[in-house]
Length: 263
Image: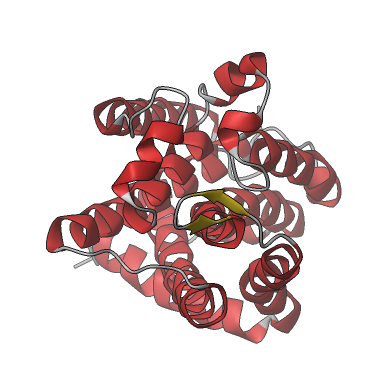
């Protein structure tokens, strides 16, 4: 009897995690780079942006959201084309392996890296930059749900976007600028309400803006919601837009994913 699609996906996920840990450069870049950015920006910008809220606290919340994009979207959109170029995907297809099993494997390694990275950011943010932990159970549940939904969205969109680079060699040059631009306009490196209105409206089309806003609703005081452009956290709108991106990304990924050079 052939193993189920889910079982194959779980086995593939275990292998993906082991392969990830063996790639020291990838581990360092994925896990350490956001921490380095946190130390740089958190140490340089210490100004108070609202009563009881420093920029370093604001920045930690943004980096946690951005970490989901780094571990999911950016890593997958770069490494899947590389695996395609190396023939790894063709070999998996010849096993044969279902695309769903392959996606499950990628989701597992993203979840693993995300948990480690977020834990590092929270601990460092707490002890070095005064990050406040959520004050009640509902905020912790919101945080957990944001991690799950953000991880799913980031993974699916990374798989979908991996069909755009023509080769693995050029994937980084195409994907990294997209991520950097989104970080700058989504309230990661700057206070979102300080950005031009047109930039705020453009950023609102993409999930990172809503993930950063959601993380601020968890780690910053409720009073800070008045500083947001809509003067509230807009939680209902946030969940709706993230869900729409997951649905759209799933359709995109299923239709565009390819094992090799076939069109």
